Image 1 (cartoon, helix red, strand yellow):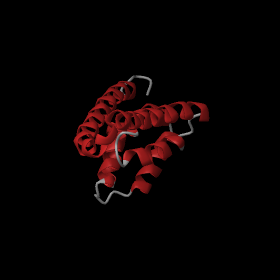
Image 2 (tube, one colour):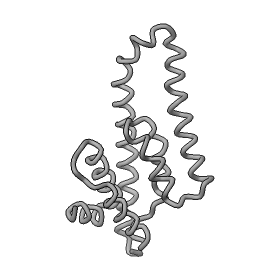
Image 3 (cartoon, one colour):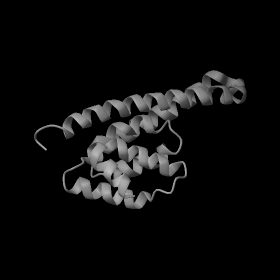
Image 4 (cartoon, one colour):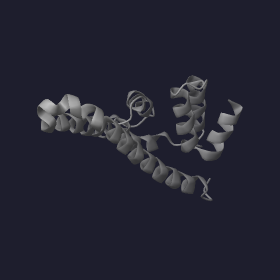
Length: 148
């Protein structure tokens, strides 16, 4: 776990994301310890927890992440109105997408489901990775600024 802590100090949010993802796929990474460390770094000003609000929108489209994202971001001391705007918008977008596709597909929804599940998941993953890369670039720029 010390190597993981070093990654977090060095790479910030990107390392947190990767370590949490590795824990989800089954590697023995103690999420609780990891999140305690993230809380510590947030408390001392090394990390800022409110950058997670932008992750709520695409997180709904990624199985496994949608269940954790709202909990983690909700615990990040965001004002409830800010959290609600992003969480509700993500939930509306996610549910509206699948309800809309089902509405358009009609009776063919059972045959369509396996055909669209893969591309939708891939598209959502790509969108999330692009968003993640943009956030990482913004964060790295702030972490290397002379103010810190």
